[in-house]
Image (cartoon, rainbow over all chains, first blue to last red; front, side, top):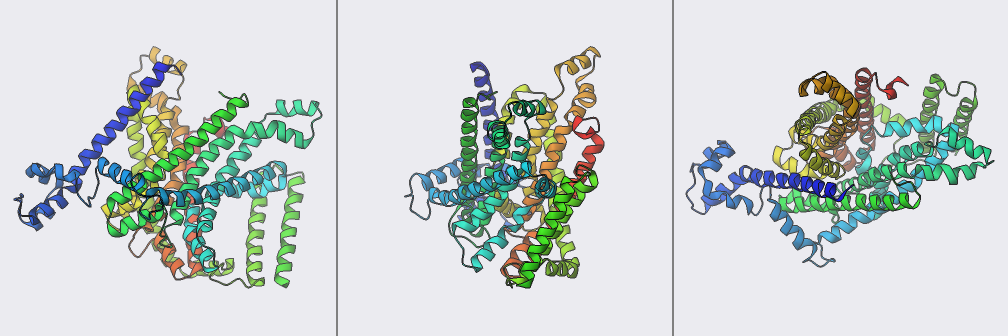
Amino acid sequence: MTEGGVLRNLAAVLTVVGIIVVIWYAACVPMNIKGVLTQAAREGVAVVPEDAAERRAASEIGLVWQNRFAIPQTWAEDRPRLPAPHQVAIEMWETTVEKKITSKRSLIYHGWVTLSATLLGFAIGTGLGILLAVGIVHSRVMDLSVMPWAIVSQTIPIIALAPMIIVVLYSIGVQGLLPKAIISAYLSFFPVVVGMVKGLRSPDHMQLDLLRTYNASGSETFWKLRLPASVPYLFTSLKVGIAASLVGAIVGELPTGAVAGLGARLLAGSYYGQTIQIWSALFAAAILAAVLVGILGVIERVLLRRMGMAS
Amino acid sequence: MIYVAFALALWALGWWVNARLASGPYASSRAVGLLAPAIFGLTLLAVWELLVRGLEVPLVILPPPSLIALRFGGSLPILWADFVQTFVKGALSGYVIGCAAAFVTAIAIDRSDFLRRGLLPVGNFVAALPIVGTAPILVMWYGFDWHSKAAVVVVMVFFPMLVNTVAGLAEASAMQRDLMHTYAASYRQSLVKLRLPAAMPFVFNGLKISTTLALIGAIVAEFFGSPTVGMGFRISTSVGQLALDMVWAEIVVAALAGSLFYGAVAMIEKAVTFWHPSQRG
């Protein structure tokens, strides 16, 4: 892409992000106005209408219009229904940069707990997934009997197994990192199997025939043709897989009321009404996902260029 | 021990039958294509049953399939109520609202090249995020009942659907568009007669991805708070009571609902995009 094209795309993306931020700030006003007015009335400020019951029944937009003085306060509440973007940003700054990493309130600490489970599970899941895919491609029996189930598994919410795995493993004494990693592993397993099978099968007849004329053995065909040809497919499913792994690790932290991890932050935030904490945990998870997918994308690009397959 | 030996023998038998089927003359027929996975699945269930009985695995770790089936048959009313609460009220309504909203948004931004250029990377980015995390926020806003679950589903399906629809609308080739232009077709005509039909494979791809996301969203959102009915609620409370047969029964319901939902959308796709190479086989 030309430099001008990149710049124009960047401008477009920034515009869209800007629009979203503006909508967000605007949405904070009606979302938080009732809480702000209740607070103000308690402090003796005159609000319209004065009766609390009447305020509860009134529409948010009308309340905003009648109490315009309260608008700035809707972006600075302690426990808002919808925190403003800068409140979330400040909270994230305070809990990442200004807290020690070892602190229980450090977002980096919680992020690391989730990330380590994600990465361990992702490694297990992709490793087993690639092995199974190799088996499926080379064995007609496995292809016929296992592959349909791998495809069906994509349409069912296997994440529903998560609470059970955590509790069952806990009851036999396994806890901490491993149960979450197992959930991450099986969530990334099936996308990798399906993508990898597709990739290993992507060489066409012409290429396979060529290798046959070279008198290549089965393993040579595999290492020199099938495996390299599968790399683009593999990376596509790796990106899906790592996102699924992260979701798995987060959901895996919910059922035991875990004390650490981004999922635990979400749960604790929702118990205690700490909305800013929920939003900052959510953004931390989003940044983590984006970074992980981004790293895979960079590796993919470098690898494909090295292999001479870059498009 | 006899059970375990029997399980191993059964496994070997199932594998042998499938190996014969796979190397036999009808290996690529449709019947074998259905029979082989069925045999594999049934063997797996039987081996599970025999191993659990043979090794005397405690019920709180892994109940045998027969007990799960009994529990499934015995609590149909509860399972049905949970299904209605989570799937029909939560997932399905959210799915319809989310997909429709994304479809309309895609058509709305389609006219502006600038917006499309900006929204596509943002949409792709958001589609990869762990959006289930919005569940606690939405449960706080919309209460414990199905409305909050539908809201989670809307947020989850919106971006994958949007990205797919926008990509689909760009699918009609320049040649085809020029042809519509020479017919003096208006924007509306070329949208309805050329670009929407051409976008359908992509739209259905988005719809199919969204079926799974909708169920995941509805179930996980119930882990953050729900009325005393619903699949996610039943799973988390039954896990707490160590009633694992009930958990497995709910998982069976979730699996059935997920694959039937996907199958239904795939069938509609077959009828709508019958012209597409991937459907003509």
